[in-house]
Length: 326
Image (cartoon, rainbow, N blue to C red):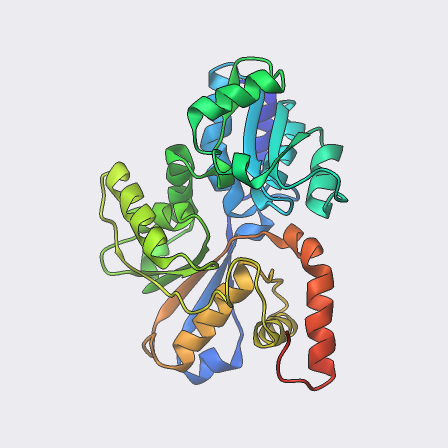
């Protein structure tokens, strides 16, 4: 195990719990605490650290100096993996969905500056990203030096899910909360949290894309692999705003007001949709009066840069007094 690994793990902070001062919550007699996973480390934070840490440790134990994974141009996972490669002096390769003739996103600019090698896959090839035989083809085609440690898109493998168990296990007295809420994309983070939540707790997942039947099955499959049913859980599937990275004037207005009121930053892809769901559930008494709610801030704030133009258009629409945006 490298000295860099010890140095890095000592630099990762334990998540801080922050009580939310939000008028509606006081009015409805609920207490909401935000688990600030976004503050763990300047470069490696959020749920992405928890999904990566067991994979990185295993790669180092196996003597792999080369790590490869997949993602889109704004991927929080690839951003975190590139940062880990820089901090641990590893060779990291990212296979990107799309075409290389387009300008690099802010996410990929960071990744290349940190040393990640980028290779582009068209949509048809990218569909094979879960096939291990395809990983071998890619390693050969792009002359990756063996051994290569492969991490699935989003860091969503069993080691990643097990790492996400520590999100709650690292939280002091997490058993005191009645309801636990997290945004979900692949379902790995939510599955890890469900598996260690207590029977009296309700875990709510807020999907950020249209995926409820698929996501429900994926989470159940992870729980079976972990050998636990965990706590009660439910997906709140009405807050995706039309799909992954889709926005609405209502969501942008909510996000901007929430940030101004609480001084807690949100991103429009994950955490804004999650907090909007929490506010809506409390407002409509779906979460009981007197409840203590833990909300996991999964980070992903770097991705706001890639949404800047879209956010500006929505904000211009709001400032003009229009009620909708096409």
